[in-house]
Length: 92
Image (cartoon, rainbow, N blue to C red; front, side, top):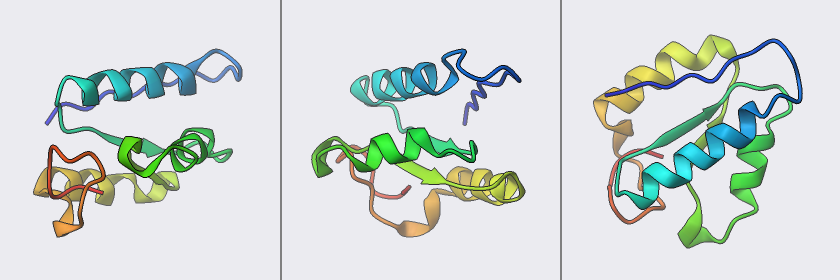
């Protein structure tokens, strides 16, 4: 499992936009992708929820205290919940 984190203190620097573009790009390459939105604004998660069901990424809005457990869940296969993407059958 590869983990990419996009972090910077400055707001408005394009972190969410970059993360979403990378996640969509990975998904289009048939890579199993999970997007964990730790930003209190939740813009990445909200954007994802506004997409058509067949186009949604596997995304979750979470607090920083939940990150370790979510990463473990992703590595273990997501706990058997169905994925939106159609390429995998486990992480959501």
